[in-house]
Image (cartoon, rainbow, N blue to C red):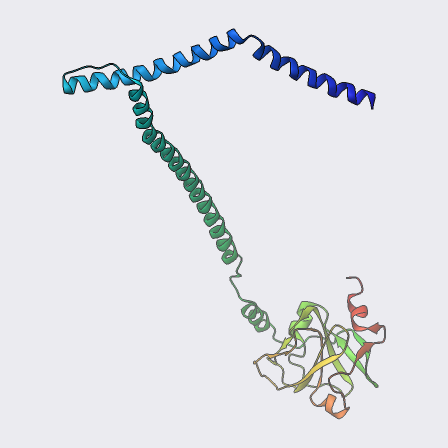
Length: 274
């Protein structure tokens, strides 16, 4: 507390000393004010003198400035000062508008570059066209694939596993028979509205569209050689199971039935490393 009070007292004493020095010498202070007044009067007198010389050249006479002349000069300067203020303000507004214009141009340029980049990312070949090219290159059935037991409700089947992109593109193409309790299972790379067709497929099939939990969401009949894709109504499809046509009806399997493999749930069986 003592240290704090000492510092405060010192600060106040220095301020008091400065005020005393400034006002103590009354004569010196009056001299300063008188000199400042004379300087101001000289500046105004010179301005008025120039104005009078101009008036004398016009009127042919010359007069000494009086008190009213100083007041008139002051009032005469007011419009000039106001005009200068307006000009200064206008210049600031113009500078702001120019800065704003430059900023808007920069933003527009950035937006155009982003838009151009978006169009540039568009693939030259649409996915459907690319798929058609790949399917046209397929001319024969693929060999029998790896199999695994699967359980659909209380039913048991042996399903071939179409795991690679080539295996999934080929699927059941050119196959001419399928045993009653056999199927082909397609684990899709990501959840999507699945889309299957029957190009080059002479055998009528049924397909179950299955969600990531292994639950059947939709069942569709697929007709031989039909190139119209059967698109899922749901966008939450991760697996497709193809059987001989009518298998699900014959075994009373409907949407809502769960499917698993001999190793457990579908996701854990095929995507446990992900």
